[in-house]
Image (cartoon, rainbow, N blue to C red; front, side, top):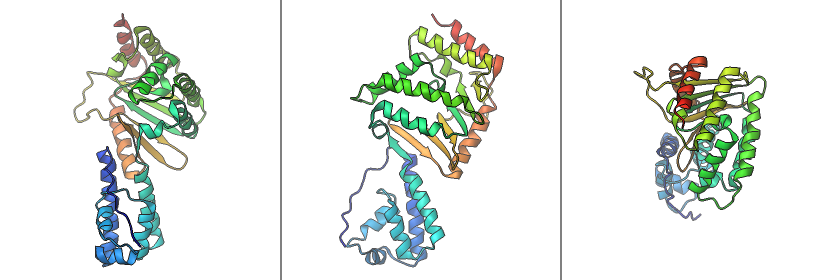
Length: 299
């Protein structure tokens, strides 16, 4: 059997590449535990070239589910270990998705896909260092952000108005009984002005109303003051963590795409980071006082 070997570019995310290398190292351990050299493994797999073995095990190319099944078959791996390796491969494969891939069906299509996920959420945590979270945005600010996204991502489809409507509809999930939605903002977020003053004012008033009325009751909002004593607790990258019926996932949005983490040891680390950061936040009237300062500074 002839296998054409193509070296694919490494992911633009070092985290995704590192995950692929960890999976490759596990496959290499499987092979060495079976007492097989790379050449002998390739022969038993029916491959004309043994270079593919090294490329997969070093994470130098995409590792598919078929690769994992081949390693397990050739090395006589028990079913339970094969299931674990396949789960790891699925997590690695879905870890990095570019904005180009996410927005293939336009901004509206992406927002509709997100809606389905959010209606399954049991608990949701958002830590933001840059922008107002989408679930708390006004319609005007959402329009600004999505218009900017269309320009930055060079999207041909102009479906901003439909995407805005979809995000506004998605915000209804905050009212679902039995759910919990926690939002944590660095104070700088309420000072950034990506939109005209009147749009920014409306957005800050919405946050103030949320704190004043405590509605929906499922929502918690904290703000980390600029002058908080942060010894031992540095700002982290913005992230979203969602508890779904069957798993917990963490998403980190980067300039060119999204990183998604699903392995328990990874999501646990983000949960611990959330607890550290949440301990710095102020709430209620203290948070409203910070918003009032930002409002007073608007022209």
